Image 1 (cartoon, rainbow, N blue to C red):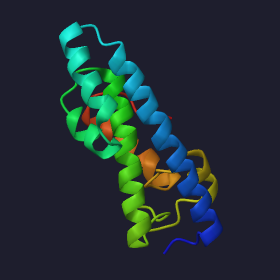
Image 2 (image 1 turned 30 degrees about the vertical axis):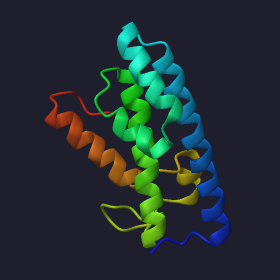
Image 3 (image 1 turned 180 degrees about the horizontal axis):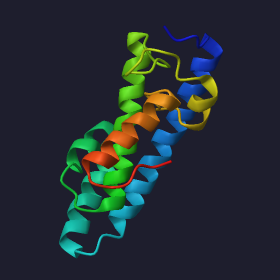
Image 4 (image 1 turned 180 degrees about the vertical axis):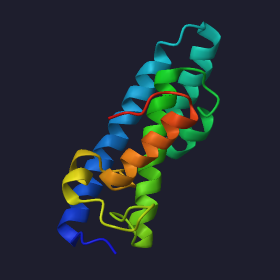
Length: 134
């Protein structure tokens, strides 16, 4: 069980809420600059009127790496909010140990402790045939 207290969880929730708003501002801005006029018009219309949750579904098929990264960041926030609701926020999904408040301040959606994250990245790099990150 995570050792985060209520004020810490509230502060981290505020950070995620700020990030949520920033991500959607960036997504809407990027949509306005898409190259294909018809695609830009189509997505921009939907983006302007869609609530944030609806926009996630609307943009699932967008083939823009920056928009996809922003969407992944939003999905990470959704997952972190679910862990808060379940009472497991701040616990490493691999080993069950505390993720650490300082790590969460830097990366509020972190789902692994540093040791498990490093191991996860090492395994992922090996599976992709890359050298291991340090």
